[in-house]
Length: 264
Image 1 (cartoon, one colour):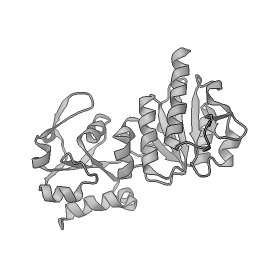
Image 2 (cartoon, rainbow, N blue to C red):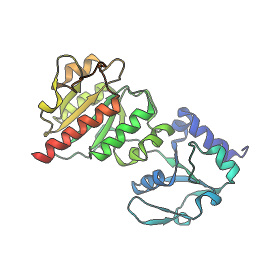
Image 3 (tube, rainbow, N blue to C red):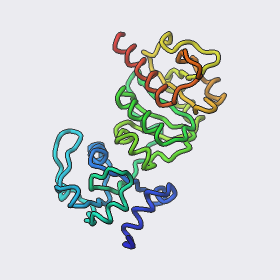
């Protein structure tokens, strides 16, 4: 555990400042790593435990098998005892990798004629953002834009909860001002999810270029988004509580867009 390579790995897992400084993120598990490789991310170092992994290959999301020896990166074999201390999650698969970050900006986005974009403002919990990314991937959204983020996009909890969707859906962090300007320039309709001054989501057209915008569960969206919106939408609340988990709400709205687009 005193090996410098192991110390660096742990620092990358635990500190967002270290990840930014090194330009590296940590990916644990064969499924997550397979998505990462399939989407063209560059692997810097792989740590593996032969006793746990049982093979020198991983199955990619495409169904192909990739031999670890064919990867042009550093490889470090560790004992089961060491691996149990560096594994971030309870169930281990014997493989952890340090991966080079991709720093996308809004202008890097390649969007079709009528894109579907998920926008979240100041979402704090990595688990919620990970779940939103999974829903965005399932709905084939063209991007997830995280405005004024309160969590690191490469937080290990986010990668784990997204089960690798962070690598499959273009995900960009920026300010709300930058995002609003971008959406207006691209003539993408802004639909803000809010309870006040809103109409039911299924009565709102989502077949055109659409950005669905969600705020935090505690305070909702800031005024700049409410004022920039082309329409305000809400999910009907029939019980005694007045809100859903933000990731659940995002999934409902994304799949309404899917329904409308499949019917149009």
